[in-house]
Image 1 (cartoon, rainbow, N blue to C red):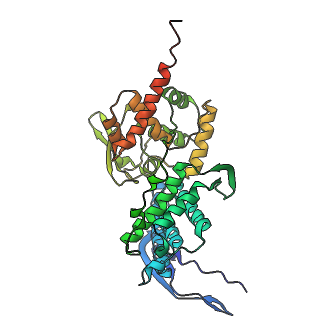
Image 2 (image 1 turned 120 degrees about the vertical axis):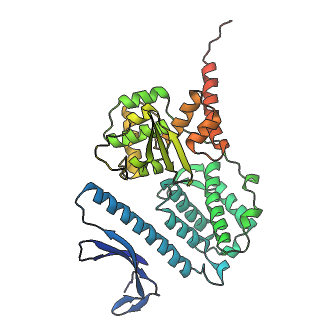
Image 3 (image 1 turned 60 degrees about the vertical axis):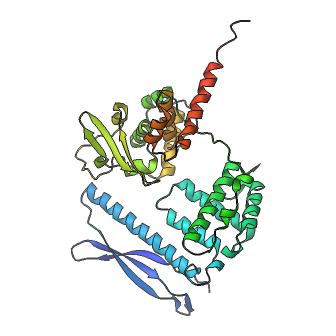
Length: 392
């Protein structure tokens, strides 16, 4: 008879007399016990002091969605804590803990706060580590030689699709290798801070000695293409408005999704936007142009705490964007993040200085903004090259 292991932490609800539902976590903390009557183990309940209220208005539904999202975040944290206990991250024999299990725990914790791309990258790192050394890699076995060997392995590895199939005869790009190694380096740094390991082997290994990242190609839209898109209908008007708003202010999709009417502040005739960026946790204060304000949906009777843009899953958003852009006759491959690239290149093209653009984007390092300056310089060179031979 086959037995399925229990989910370690489940979200459950308790009906209250006042009509609310109290949210609690059902935590399975014991070892699996197999018997003829089934699988058992020790359970404990953790009441979160979070409540689902009866829904009679849109505000009630949004409040319940936010409450449930918080409960799921706590659930993910508890799962990681249980996995850490199970795999020895809190006992005296920490160096024998499995690196792959540790990164899987990081990936689980990142699902509620990181981009889909980063979570996919972590999944690829786990797959590649297993191909390189198997399902069990002890922290004590990871040293400079291990890291060098892993980078060598990556440099010879074929590209794979998201389903794990070989996508082409090409090997991984240098940028992909840098991204994958960065995940492993981050895991080692975190393990060192948590005293899982006594020394950090990545501090003795310089990746740039083997691999140097290439300048990435950043897709963006020109001002003329933006004009065309504004005039082109989109099947989802909210996605269209959110994308164009991002093109005109530079916010990431993670911040656009969290934007509420309370984040918009009036100062005389000027409307400013103030928000703490989810990725960097840094506050940013942006004056909004009249063109950006045109893309805001009608507020109606919405309260300050309500979301400005109600958006769906990021994958769905990008699919809608690609079809919309194609219908406008634009052949570029577009994702929502292209809006941020568009804002940066547009500002520099219109004459804004590099320092100001870096502040508008919330970059902590101006070297990140210089990538866009290089794009603008390249476009200037291409324009100059259009001048025909006038002397022969």
